[in-house]
Amino acid sequence: MFLLLIAPVLMSQTWPPPRMPTPEEFEQIQEMMRASTLKPSRSVRDVIDAERPPERVSEKHFEEALARFKDGWFLTSRFSEQQGFEIDTFLLPNAALAKLQVSWKSAVIDGGKAILATATPLESLRIDAKVTSGHIPLPSTAPEGEVQRATASVVLDVPLDFEASVVDCRRPTRVVAGLRCDKDVFVLEVDDLPEDAIVVPLNSKERPLGLVETSREPLFGMKHERISEISYATFTKGPGTRIRFEGRAKGNVRHVRILRPKPARRIEMEATAIQEPEADAYTPRSRRRYAPPEGNPPRYGTLQKGALRLALKSGRSCAVFGHNAPQIWVEMPALDNSKLASVELLPIKVSGRRGDHTVIENGYNADTHRYAWTLEGEDRETPFGFSKLQASAKIRYPLAVREFEFPSATGTPSGKASPSATFDENRVTIPLGEIGAGIVEIRGFDAAGLELKRFGMSQSNETSASYAFMGPVAKVIAYVADSWVETVAKATLRPAPLRPKAMAGICTE
Image 1 (cartoon, rainbow, N blue to C red):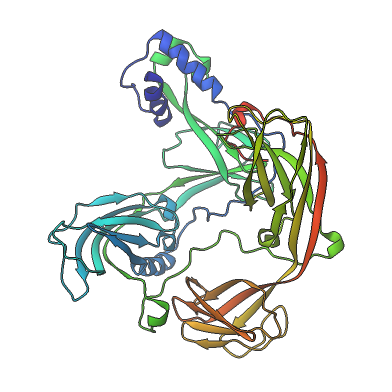
Image 2: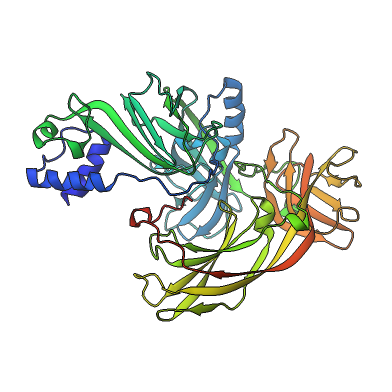
């Protein structure tokens, strides 16, 4: 119990702790801290973080974003005394760092009847960087009916500026006391690192990498040592001001960016959540709704049949539960074409097996561009064992995925000459004659270039396809897959090497 108590105290730099540990408990803490030290992965591939990094925001940009955010409140399903809502928090700059408090003042059902007698207490919402959801508590006496709108008093704190510095792993500057990088693991030592500081690992091109796990701990004594390296007497004197930050990134770390937020901007306002309109009921006066932005744009491409590489390989599960269970991988090209492929594992032949097994389909992983299956043995604690297996997979792969852009004004779409699409407020009809019928993705944008959320409905026939968006459409981008190929990949596989126990749940490669 004491270990569970002292660990967060050390990370938050709170001193003295609620109860000073005994010398015996201190030794247990040291063992725990030694065991938590990260070890670099054997092999690493860079995965660029899809989330938008924190940024400095101009006054004009913030005012425009705030206006859209006030209109980004929508009602979802009602369950008796709970009314669901969604807030498009991605419309806020630096949303992941913002703080949001809400008090619901009123709620009105169909017919205009108010059903919220008193305002709800001011509640802090846990912000999701894309869409934040929750429930409005309704009185048990509230009559049945669809809630048409609900109004809230909102207190919003948003960081708009940062003190930023970038440190090179090979040439640390005076900004930090020390920085060591080893493949995907890095250790940063810095004085007076505030709790809300953001540490971003970067690759050799200074592009942000995703963070898999992190830890922070204060250092002790004149030599700035870790708790695992000091005596009990030094520990009782308390930590210094220097912090040790350790992290594992999704890729090879070559630089580290440190962002210290300046005081946040506080906004007090009122927002009204309404029902999302139905596709058939949408009018120019309806509130538009935007789609959460993609961190990285789609990366489709064209491959020659002879250049297509589809390889069957042996792997291991990186999951915490079932760690090291053997897997079969189909490795595909590092293009978004791969997510469109259909893959079927044909019956496998296993030699030298110990016990029975079940083949579990894991599906496609966009980070690794692999399609995977896990061989699960009778005992989940012990990986299924075998000497070799013969595997084959039937694969249908799109060799070409092309992009066509249709502006609302008369013009020639990009990618290939084609007739113009027909625009009617929030609807668009795309001719299929020259682009083919293989539309795999469709995106609509308003006049400001912001992507609109799309209604689920679509209509198509032999000559055209129609789509509806939640706002006036100024431009549509369609991705069309054609020139598919069908093939069978075969291989005789031996078990992959076991992953270290410390890597359970760490899925970097």
